[in-house]
Length: 284
Length: 238
Image (cartoon, rainbow over all chains, first blue to last red):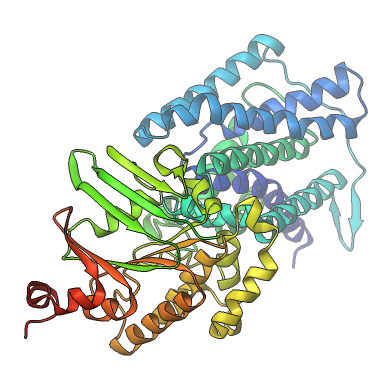
């Protein structure tokens, strides 16, 4: 195989790992609470600002800024649930979408007010590594490994803990949960906090690859939603696999054309998927 | 250990639709009590109101002195009320053991998970064989075992069973009633709702006949079986 194509393929897989985290978080919240957080990419954006601020302005070590980012965005997820989603749980889905969409603009506006629209860079990079015939960005490889670790931790949480098992159960049948001694409202809160923490982890991995600005969410938000719909909304494994597929399409599409072209290919593929398999690529 | 369940004057329904009109009912410790009646008589609503899934609009529900209407539904399993709902409502995408785990969610039950799971496996050895199988792949009778097992994980003092024989083949129905009999022999208090009047009256001590949300008759099983009106309406004449 052409080594440039191979490099594009490897980069696609690395990119997929980073797409996978927000897709898992969005699917987790949707599966449990049955509400789409339209502002999910903006939670990631706030997390990116948190890391940038703590590292470059407050002078914290990078690892401490990363460690602080997770609880900060997790708390943001909790607040989003308590202040916006919970009061609207009984409302029509369109109201919920409009409300979380409103939060999207609120967060963009708030960050513009505080940090203006300048592009902010962390200015850290790891040296590229030569693997066989191809070069792999050290930063991207590290981000990929961290994303896989995060996904594995999430899997273990859902598989082995009581709360995780209840989360998988509630996604299928919420009405029966009180008979199991489960308070659904408490599970919603936990899922929102975990969904926020995943956005926080995604922020750590993206801030080393992208400059931060109030509208940076647009560069990965729409593709995250496409991945979730392609994998089947609420289907965690489907979203996880679709993230890699989308990463490869974007990366290899960019190899044959420009980055803009690669997004045209990705969205085209998405539209075809929606017509061919409206309930997701992996729906049975 | 056991406790008395006592309902008086219970009214309940869904929105504008009223399903129960002043139900009075009593289950003593160690008793097995049946609730029978035609479709739409309010039997399922009665169990749902006891386990807190819907709230009564009037009347009182007490269990061992606790006011059930004032207790959040998710705390009732810890009080010892277990409800096996209509159509079993297993989590089909979770394994048998994971279903049991969800049934042991309350903090008090988690501490005893292994011990109670092993008791369920002793009671239903079939569930032990199938422990890692997805609940959705079980046969109808096995699903009923799994649903009862899941309810037993909170160490109930009263077990509410909603139509355990519904949708099952006749031979499996017999197995399910054998299960209920075995649970009784364990000393557990049981309140069972059934369409299958002839079968259920053989298992329970007493029964209530519900018609359009009201108690139309009540009595000992033997007396109900002998009652000509009951025989005509529910036991196929003669």
